[in-house]
Length: 487
Image (cartoon, rainbow, N blue to C red; front, side, top):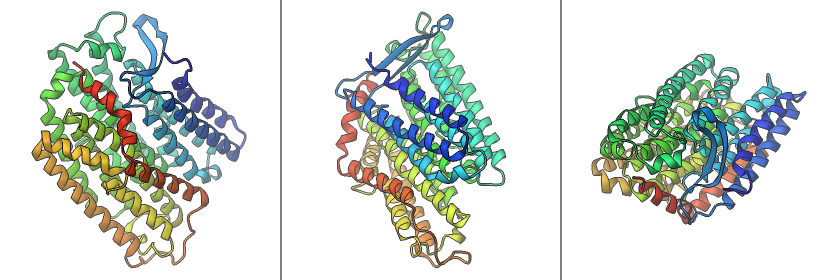
């Protein structure tokens, strides 16, 4: 048990900040409150990581309190080496998103915008911390409220309300499958702790019950991942929603985390029997995402489809049921929070300057925006797994583990990586190095200090974890071993 309620602080601080920001009399005051809360959240997340002993497997910083006694549900939170680093990654991405959306203080209902972002941050921290399955589901569903209104009210496209409804309906359908699956798990473990994840993992369910739970959780988390063919909401939201919110949704792969934390450990026998299904869905997502990204002429849609391919590689690594695959998956998920999130933020910077991210408006941008062009290339190379960047170690582990356990799928994934390099470099050449488009201005505002600070921070982290990957691997090694030992 933790002597300090660090995880409760991480969940509650943004919620309190959201309430204060909402009650502020003007937009700029709300913005200041939001920034202060996000900065404090970042410091608290780092403190939580520092308090961990990563050489020891198992959950730490555990807090347990009665919640719904009649259902034997508890307020139970804790983290291990597989989830701890998602806390500072989440805090950093939300802090960057707030800075990127600094001018939202001058738009309609700024207090509500900043309040909803902080509320989303708090419940996202709850997703990464919850060890009671019912509590996890509560946090999972609570993300729908802020995301729906952020997309519907501050989206950039004319069909933003349609996109918000589409996203919400997809997530509600996934949530229904997820809730039913978790209730079946609880039914298989009658007693005083039917929702206690650590106890549930000690006694596996009967094999016959693992089958429906596996498919229910696969649908529930697969929509959020998203895996093909459950992906159709993401390109719509990427085009219609605010870029900063899309950066959070694609940078933090909550669905993939759900597969890692709940689906595979709760259904160990069936998951291993159906490893071919997971690998097949992963390969389809990798190839489909790459081929679809190659066909796009809008930067945001290209990044959305590339995100589908990237997370497919993570699913493939999990399907190997190896330490290399699990560590590679965690490393890549953390890498995506920086690279994919950063690329979407740059797309937002471009939209603020040009009013569009269509390729016709992006030609020859290296001349008016040399720093932005350089950071976009660097983040993209890291997302492709270029050596000496944070994307290389995780991608290498994922491909190595896949080739050992699923040779065909591993070769297909390698082909998808090559396609990924092709579509990114091709788009970059046209958008930044090609001739200026018909509507491309000859001069554009350079990166603002806050924008430059975001990109420098992301760049430094990419280099640190690329040059010293053991910093990440030593965090997850013991927890990955314990994850594989689940009966």
